[in-house]
Length: 137
Image 1: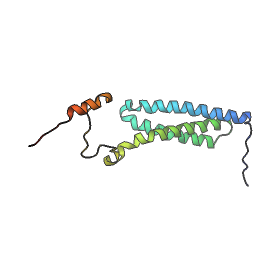
Image 2: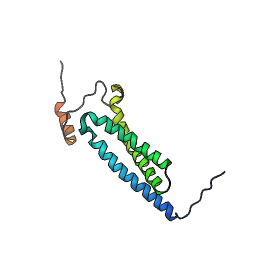
Image 3: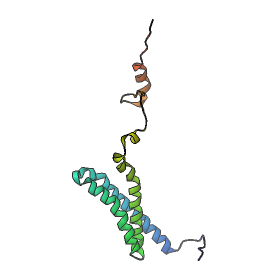
Image 4: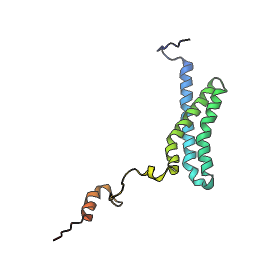
């Protein structure tokens, strides 16, 4: 059976579903972000809270949206969407420690002299003061 594409003004049910989904996604993202942000302060429980939250929330949201109907299903869809968004945002930073060290090096390979810490505005004057000129006869 072919699907038709139609543009029309949304019905109140559709607007309500979108509002509920976006609201629950925002609240989920806020709550999950707070848990992930404060998890390093928990010491040995950090991986349990971080990975458990990042993987558990989208799974609970997806399961809840599949096994419920109506507005509750819309809430769970928002929870799944918000949880998946936070997982996608946090995943690169969480996987980086497990990557090989050669792959993490972004710049400054062999033979490149890097400037010390300080204000970026003073970088030209620091580079000039560290430059050495030698004359050989």
